Amino acid sequence: MPAHLTLTTALDRTTAGADALAAFATAALTVTALAALLFGAVALYRWSLRRHPYTDCRMCKGTGRRRSRLFAHSVGHCPDCSGTGLKPRLGARLLNVR
View 1: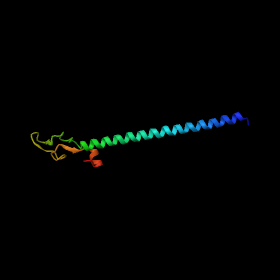
View 2: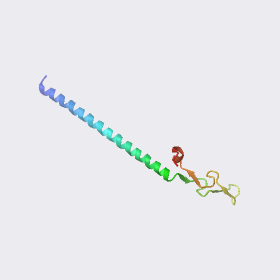
View 3: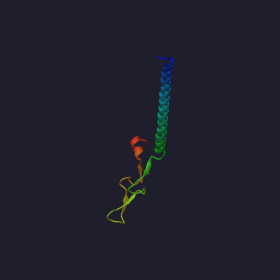
View 4: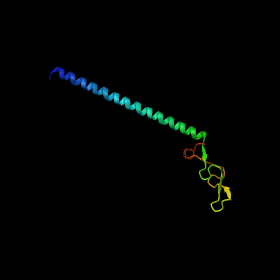
């Protein structure tokens, strides 16, 4: 076998190894960046839940009172929010953040 073919084959293997290493490094950097971004988003969401754990009740629209369906002049406490007008946010309930 001629010497120039052996040298070319060795260079091709070195280049292929360098390309594979560069691809692995790029993939590792991408995964690390996405993990950091996800961690930051979760941390911001938990901070938001801690700062504002309640939302307006959808049934009474945050007033704490609901009108009767049968008698339009009758008003009573909202049974969903116990008259407070506030309900815990879904994330606050699931993650137990208060």
